[in-house]
Image 1 (cartoon, rainbow, N blue to C red):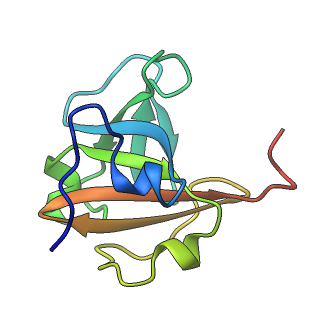
Image 2 (tube, rainbow, N blue to C red):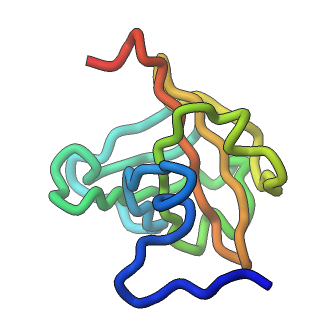
Length: 126
């Protein structure tokens, strides 16, 4: 039986696995001022650079090949040290991709919720 978390305790992925909060991704269908187009992924993103809470709005092109879950349900994203290790035993809901140079991203599902995992190439982190 899995031990239940107490109110004051962080989630197990933070407390035991060392994952670090990165952002909250919120899908939208409304264009936002200053959104940036990630042409190769067919998405528009806005807010990450300026939100003090790490909120990122995501708008998808009509022919973007992501699941309906990712298009409609907000996701939480965690930075991990080793993406391949973090993916052990997880269910992928999208192919691993790279939104920018030195970044690998995977989307998994947990209890019906999309979770994004990001790995940053340490040599490119500045």
